[in-house]
Image (cartoon, rainbow, N blue to C red; front, side, top):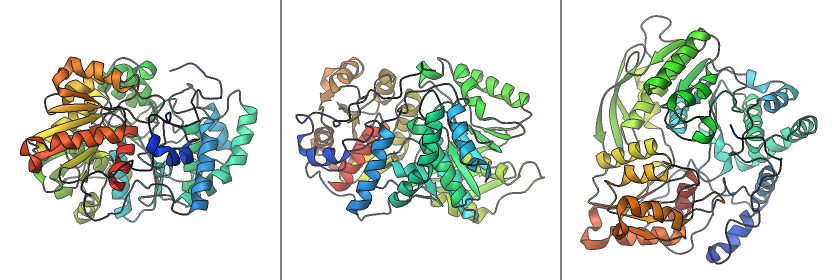
Length: 513
């Protein structure tokens, strides 16, 4: 864990970048200037990029509100939140969030919860769990992070992000209580702690029948860990945030295992051996019931299908055949198996004899799942895919899925990453599938510069396969041009990756282009 920091963050709130860098974004950047640069995205295209991706579709990653007054109110809330500790500054304590829950009347205890942690796959798994619960006519709240385009994505009700109006209203509802806690504690509540309090309050106010809660980072000391999740979900653990969580999967599992509560059911994805040992030991200590992927549940079979894959899943009560999942890759199939087991556990299946959920309802739920920024196709001709992989394990899963599901004859990578990440490991995972890579940077103050990324990329790809474009719009344009070279227009593609922030900014540029 990092040391405690003063309450003011060290971010530059005068804008994402200097005028020489994003000169064509000036108006939009000015509107966004006081948002937390780690969380904001630029909401404009600097020029027309090629070929729209087809008809508009319902977007689970909303942009700014169209109503100027609502947009202004949301921006004001974001500005206030941005004065607090950012999400990368942690304090190993839940005392402040517990104090906030106390003065709010313990809203997190008004509904049962499914708590999701792990290194990769948390958000997609949470979305699948939510879709299943919705399909069984339960009203749900979902809390996930980080967001792709709008902070409102983090708090969802019944499968959709809350409106900007409701987000603002919820903030002002909890603000007096937040200020009470701020005054009583040594350090003010952080950005993430306030959002967590807002989510729990919004869920109680709705009210919801069940909450699906993704940890921000780790588990034991995460702000979300004031809930007592009847079901704890541990997605695959790998190395990420090693400066805060530990340098081995086993050490990281010690922190993440804190979400396993007394008497809970633990849904355990396949894990490295040392991580599995730690988690099983924790389960024994608190008398939790464990269901393991590959043992009590798992993926029986899967086939690539148009727009996703067809699965046969084995739950704790039996098999579910003919499940269409509109997401790509073996890792998403595994996430689906984990999500199914979590919902079975929520309904008591596995403890009450051999029975299964209604198969048609399960099929309907999985067919409705979306996960913005996770192998998401946003353009055609050439195909442009977005994936938020930001560590080697995530990159390896994305590379395998792209190879299996798309069959590009020529694939160009666009990579923008944050400081402190294992970018060499990410590049090495993508090297076999990228014909060339365009390195760039996003608007975050924590972004690695394009030149820093290029130095690593050249060592992995060689100088002839690396192009440097510091501006993201230029990088996208360059990648599309490279993909179309050598008359391979039909089989060419672009994969934008390396960071959720990079993917969010690219998503807005490409959908508005």
